[in-house]
Amino acid sequence: MSPIISVSNLSKTYGSGFKALNNINLGINRGEIFALLGPNGAGKTTLISIICGIANPSQGSISIGGHDIIKDYRAARSMIGLVPQELHTDAFESVWATVSFSRGLFGKPKNPAHIEKVLKDLSLWDKKDNKIITLSGGMKRRVMIAKALSHEPQILFLDEPTAGVDVELRKGMWEVVRTLQASGVTIILTTHYIEEAEEMADRIGVINKGEIILIEDKATLMQKLGKKHLTLQLQHKLDAIPEALAAYKLELSGDGRVVTYDYDTKGDRTGITSLLNDLRNAGIRISDLDTTQSSLEDIFVSLVRAP
Ligand SMILES: Nc1ncnc2c1ncn2[C@@H]1O[C@H](COP(=O)(O)OP(=O)(O)OP(=O)(O)O)[C@@H](O)[C@H]1O
Ligand SMILES: [Mg+2]
Image (cartoon, rainbow, N blue to C red; front, top):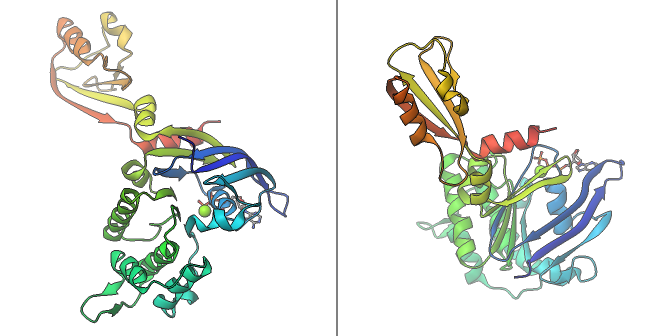
């Protein structure tokens, strides 16, 4: 399947001379949820802005649904909805007008039923009074989503959709995103909430200092880079790890009562069963054990920290 968005050899140097993107190559598959992660200033917003035609590339090319974003600007842009990171709050005098106006920008005929549905889906509609509700910060973000959906785009960019949004609303936002995906929309989102990517994304891209340092299926990524950590509480104090157990590279706590074992989650041979057998054979008795698995957050931090 050919990607719905294809970014080739994209670089961006701002007027200041700062190189914000360096030779980005990226394909977004139709219908996926792609999470773009990266520290502040990594280049996420720059990349999205260029794909959406808000900033100009310095080098490289981008096509959306086969349309070049420069040569075939209108066709490319009509496929995209963008919820920007920065909200322009003065644009909210009339939610109805602002959302309808967004649709008009794409030359689509008026469709009040669609606008009303979008607003209702985003809980921006007061059913009791049958009118648009008064907006808080989180609601304004939903208005931005409503605007982005007004022209029925096939691709939706969400640049930090849940920044500053409370837990309940964030979960509501995830529901909206899932519903959109189910209706066939391709979604690219950026977030600093790693658990959001862990929860939502089909694929994860990590960008750091203007370069993509990783693109991977979420499941593969967690399996490939995920580590498990086993903690064993001992019944009796141990002075040292017996020689017979050296291969496991166990760590013994200072007080001699806790042994820890790190192993990766690749394949199904975790070695735990044989470790427990070998411990028993060495006469070591366990009073309790506990395992923890590394999260996407651990993986992300280790990737971005790497030299
Ligand atoms: N208009 C501009 N002129 C010059 N430099 C810019 C401009 N916009 C962004 N930059 C720089 O480009 C780099 C990437 O910025 P960008 O906004 O793309 O980062 P980001 O990954 O979206 O960060 P955040 O997570 O904070 O939103 C930063 O170093 C930023 O200072
Ligand atoms: Mg940004």
